Length: 409
Image (tube, rainbow, N blue to C red):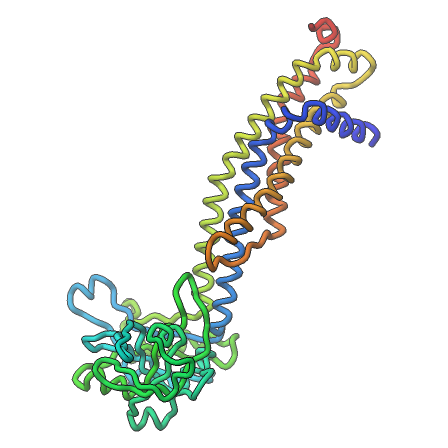
């Protein structure tokens, strides 16, 4: 223990006595660790923000949409989900608390909406009363679409706050009339704001009754709907998903080796996909910037070799006084390790500060977060670099012949 303490003391005195050289030696480590920590901090902050957004979408929700491969689309084929599919799932799938169709505008005007000379393009969707329960999204003013609105095909709608702002509507737009595809609709509700996700607003939409949307699209067009549903028990999502897949395959008469002509997605699956992407990005970027740690390690090895040369007589005196090979080896290894860890600590603080600066300069960027494993990884890798690149100089110092070392000038 005494030898270890003395080795640390000697290493620290050597670092302090050659302060500027020690700083230049650790600069590569500082830059490498700072880069890694900055990247990890920003990515982890983004990950937490994405997780929070998907939690807001509801982890027990499922979305079913038609899917046509590119080759079949080029051949003029198009898969569809029909109202009959919706009815089939309503009647044959247990464990569903809410289910609703979603029908998008298929008119020539697309999603164009007008109000008193103002116009904007938004997502125009037809749906039912259950939409708000599936998406956990409710009106802050007025009311939502009712079953009666759907049955009587009333020309009414609810809108998101972004659409209301783009049309320069009053703060309480309930009772105002807007034009959608040449038809006038009365606003009966303004939805709660949900913010942005990946830079896109979640409040830029307009909802009207499903049957009203069907009439606006034209009766001659066969509807291709999306189906959104909420599962009563989140643990039953895999079972419900498989039940839906089996029913739709049977309904669409798909044989065993034919791919599904629909996709079933949950918010949890989407979140996991983004999580995998973020993990890959973190690994690749950290690997690239981690190269600078190797460069820093080479710098430490070079300086330690110079230090061995400068202190040859000192090593010879220590050996003449009884210092053993392991004592010399430990002293120089600890000095290299101390240089690396010092650079790692400085890089850790610098990297976190850099991440905070980037987050502050980029508008609407989520906060930064440094996970414990990021700090352990940075410091651990710094220490490993110090040991690996300190072995050669330490071995050279330990293997010096004391007679030759004392004669060295």
